[in-house]
Each structure stands twice: as structure tokens, then as C-alpha cells.
Image 1 (cartoon, one colour):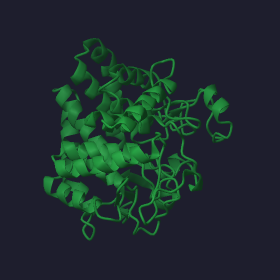
Image 2 (cartoon, helix red, strand yellow):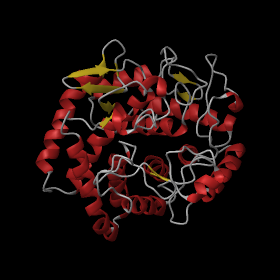
Image 3 (cartoon, helix red, strand yellow):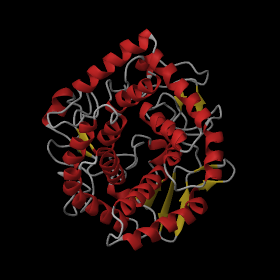
Image 4 (cartoon, one colour):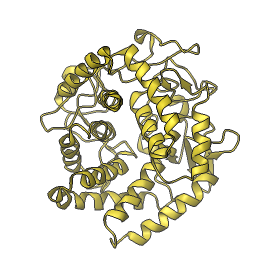
Length: 394
């Protein structure tokens, strides 16, 4: 490892400690997100699992303690749903400009992906630690999470949320929740492409972990449906790539025809065929998506593209980490090495775990002060992504 990478990695570990809560999970980021998040805290803990397995365990325990029990339209709570965000008074001390609809100590459930990620992460921890006490504790929470997802997917066969559930608070219930240009005008029941991968994988591993469970047949049917219909619904033939979202209004459905990084998360799953993955990998490494610093959130050829905006063309380290591991998981080793080199370029250049960074059309890194939304620093899932990539090269 180069000397500058050693210095950077040492600093990254210091940020892990800085973002650590008293309960052992990582706050999502400073200064806006010094709180428990479903999606962010899970992904950060998974990225750091090779170093700190206890972080993942304590993250899952903390999220299980906030699992939804009732239906509450005001907070998005549903029985079995894993929360999106739980703000504490510390959040408002660090960031007084916090959104007005966020209240201290009130869990909000505005994410469709936290629940499948929770099930996925439980399985990761269980299989790699043989912690039987944890399995006995967490099983009931996994059962409720799976029941919630099955019920939520009955209408369309896919795991969706309804546009009315976020009431213009966020652009979407997925990780690109600030990308209004892509998701802000969608209506009806919305199926995000990366979420279908998480959903598929979480159901698949649940059936493998608990064979003979009461909903095994229902799960098998749902898996079969997704395998058969993900292409007819999401595949963009002209791009040889998957759409970021399909939305349903009554019997009608529409598709967003934009190339996004989120579809690359499917590489970490078995929901699509090997041939489709080959096409996806070829497309994601074209110049409108791939840069020497990582993969953009959306294609520079998209009408929504703006590298100065929060998620409409910028580069997010955790997003690239997921794609990188998907490439390795699916056996695209040369492409994985290439993407890893891009991320290492970024680490060497930006040096700090910013929430995101961006490059212009000439592949020059844009000054952070010129970006529309100032990136948080340190951000937990950027910290974990950078450490993970550096440790793979150490």
C-alpha cells in the first residue's frame, strides 16, 4: 500500500470512531445525519464487516428495536417495516437546518429498501459468525420483515411504495432520494430496480436459511414471478440495460428510460441471467457512465444529467462499492479491477470520505464548494467503502 493510502486509511478509521454511536451502530454522516438510518447504517456496517462484525450486529439489533408495529400514514410506519431514519437531539445540535418534517426521537419509515437490506444483512452476519444466540433473537424480526415485504408486493409482484407515502418529502424511497429530476414526478406504485434485487435476494436467502418456513411456497412463487417479469418490465432493449424504475397506475405501467448506476446493484444478486449481466457490465463502462474516478449515478447523455446536483450525475463511493462487489460476485474480475482502480484514483485525489463527489464532462473533479448540496464529511458509507477498497489492496 502506498504511503499516502496508509495515512488516508488511518484517518478513515478515526472517522469510524467519530461516527460511532453509544449503541454501537454508525451514525450516517456529519453534520446532517448524526443519527440511525436503516439503509445507510446497514450498508456502512456491511462494508466494514471484515473489520468490525460487532457493528453490524449492533446495527441490526438497534433497527430491530424500531421495527414497525402499526400503520401510521404520518411516519410511513407499517408492521414489519425497518425504519428509514431515527433522528435524535444530537442531529439538531449539529445541523439546526434539519428538515422540518423530521422530529427528534420519532422513527420515520420513508424507505422501501431498508427492510430487504435488513434481512440480507442478518443472513450475512449469521452465516459468517455462527452466532446462534443472535439467530434466536433476530429470527422473529426477520419473519416480520419478510411478511411485510410479501404483503407489500402482492399488488404488482414487485416490492413497491406508493408516491403518496412520501408526500413530496423525498424524491423516492430508494437511496437516490434527492434525485427529483428522475423520480420526483412519478405517481402510483413505484418499483425501483435496485430494490427488486435486494428483495429477490432477501427472500431467496430467507428460504435457504429457514427451509420449510410457513411462507416458503409463497416466496418460491414470488421469486419465480420476478425472474420471469423483470425483463419484460424493466429491460431497455435500445440500451441493453435495466430501467431505474417502473411505476404502476391502475392497469397501466410506465418505465423511466434512463441509464443509472442503481441497476448495477443487480450484479450482486441472482435475479437476472448471466447474459443480461454481460450486457449491463458492457453498458455501465461506457464513457457516459464510467469516469477515471468511478461510475456516475446517471448517464451524461440523460436529459436529467447535471454533475453539480446531488444525485443526478455525481459519484457516490458506496454506490460504486456495491457495483464493485457485484462485479466480483458475478465473476467479472477484469472489470472489477478497473473499477477498483477508479475508486483508488478518487481516494488518492479527494482523500476524505465525502458523501459524494463529482466530475465534469472532461473528467475533472469538480470543486466541492461548487456542488449544489455540500457533501457531508465524513459520511459513514463512504468511509466504509474507501476502507474496504484499500483493505483489498493492502
